[in-house]
Length: 226
Image 1 (cartoon, rainbow, N blue to C red):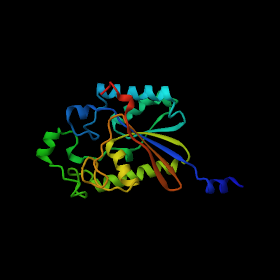
Image 2 (image 1 turned 90 degrees about the horizontal axis):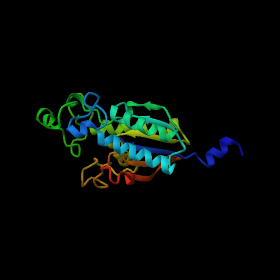
Image 3 (image 1 turned 135 degrees about the vertical axis):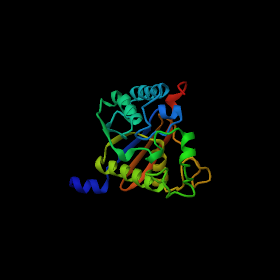
Image 4 (image 1 turned 90 degrees about the vertical axis):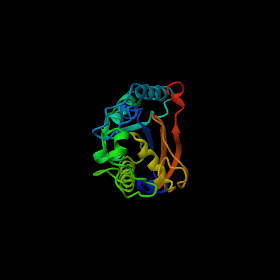
């Protein structure tokens, strides 16, 4: 049987590991962390990612990783850089499609200031309204994140892909690929509330157009770290 025929009978399996960045300074200071507001990881965030790196080095569970991506936001890039040494020193490739929802003019404001200046819409009832002027809506964000993940799978068929990304992208992947609908963090949405933890692992398997969730919000390495 030819290689092409074999591939059609046994399509290659792609594994996609989505790692949420460690706690960020923007989180700690309660600031909207877009491209202006993000200043990287907090000290606790660094400790969280180092705990994950130690785990991966010890278990070898991602030793077959062939490529390492991050969003363009500093907290995701720093997370990927801290993980690179346990992933064969892979270079960090950046992709804006993997970013958290783009906040627009609210970027860099404290959450208290944001609520006074640009009250955030309830995405559960108004998914097409922007986060703030010039920002994304939940609908546009989810479509963008879905497209970015699908592009990674298409680009790296049969590979183990590791991505340092954001809670919205991770939870959005469940809403998209399991078709459960709703908005992360909103109890009562189809599938209930979601909320990926800092430095957690969520892993997908993709084969022949079908997604299989291998694990969600794996944080066993964070015991004692916070």
